[in-house]
Image 1 (cartoon, rainbow, N blue to C red):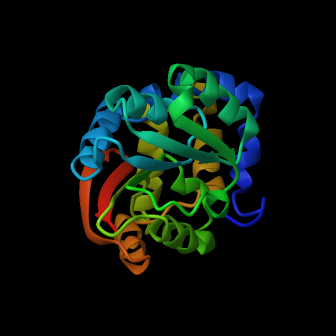
Image 2: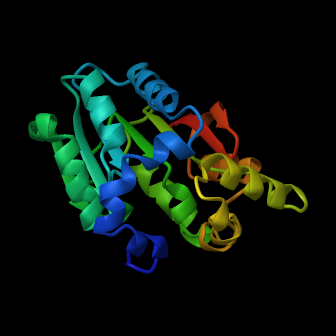
Length: 228
């Protein structure tokens, strides 16, 4: 992203959110540990033993830690707009600090690379639709030909009544406070940029990716692997 308005939800990721973030995805994302394991496996199919990987939306550090633990010779660039979330990531990946460069900003702030692979987990639903294609194109531009890109985020039908049903399912799975259900539904429906799976796949192809394949589906979350 080229400006701070491109990802308005980023301002919500302050120090308090960063401290509690590690507890959120395992509770809110069905099969979160499996998603991380599959991401590592899919990247490793084409990323060499000493590959360089771009992690977009690296704040919190959870996927960076998994990938660094799994692949001891990989190096990483992690990009995120939130300084607080990057500070949390730095703590989580401290044992691998010599192999990980963390950079505050959006995709336009990322080094050109080229990279051997890239990930973007639980991030693109914060990117406004009019910035989504630009983001994907900039990821593609930073990858070597044939490199894998693993992406996962909220994605469900955008026609009614299906949309409202999926929002309700999303909130029901992740909520721990029944009193906040309605406000959570409102937030999901108005603050996030959610596309249908068909539109998500079409944007990946329009951005230049090929062989787009769905590898993960957990209620409202979908994940794809595609190649530059």
